[in-house]
Length: 350
Image 1 (cartoon, rainbow, N blue to C red):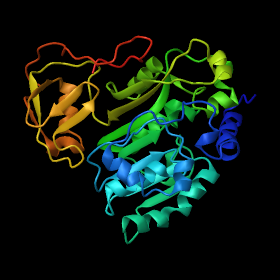
Image 2 (tube, helix red, strand yellow):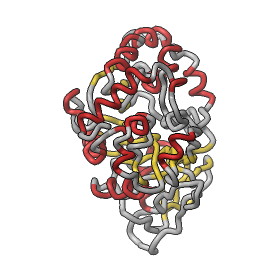
Image 3 (spheres, helix red, strand yellow):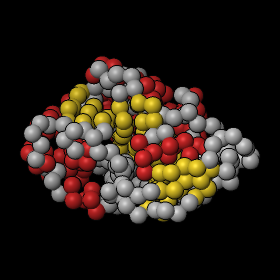
């Protein structure tokens, strides 16, 4: 069983290069997408090459709205399924950068870059792919404050040094930029012997973060408020692996966090926000998270953190936010629609 960081990393690379020839070789449902895709994404997916989609190992659909002309960084891009979806959505004037540590996966993404350029009718490809590690994005020359959107689909759990990985993410994000990702999280800390298990690690279970440790990790990096977009309990459906993990519960969670200065609690300044419409994929309503769904033209009371997310990010042109942080009314009564029972993992107050 691998013990060092290098051995664990090499075991994961071997698992994805040799053990898994397609997503049919997965031993659990952890790396299987649990979210239904919107119609517009399903239409784009029809254009993605079958060899790319057959080697897709994502657990969610971390593809947000309003990304036209943006620069997207896809961490752990694999063969490029999500990267090529982003390629279509950002348009020819946008750009998508994919990074993955497995040479065999990256080779397929590079192989089909021109195929998708032709499919989308672009003069030049708007995708570039690199072999490398999420924990050190400087090796592929990703500069500070250069990325509009960082995304990842069931990959950050594979990182050995997660604090370093998330530190890199916030280094490269532009002010107001967004981290929007899906990953596997767990209800309690995973014992060290299970973390080293090559199958559990490769199946995205052994490296899953305990949700409260994730919250603490982000707080150390100055990110005090992340938002849960969706949360689904994972059914492993493998008796041997279920016996190994025992009572540990796993969840596929899609969440977002912004490179914006926020408070560690939701504070009430009497602010109101309106969705003005204008986002092509969702003209009548906008979903910020699982309990902030804005109907076009309908005012909603919001905490100061929500107001900042809407007014200091790429969404600012789609929203009217009224009120300043001058008169304070105490804590904002804000809560996720998720409950902390056996079916869901807890989330922050907003």
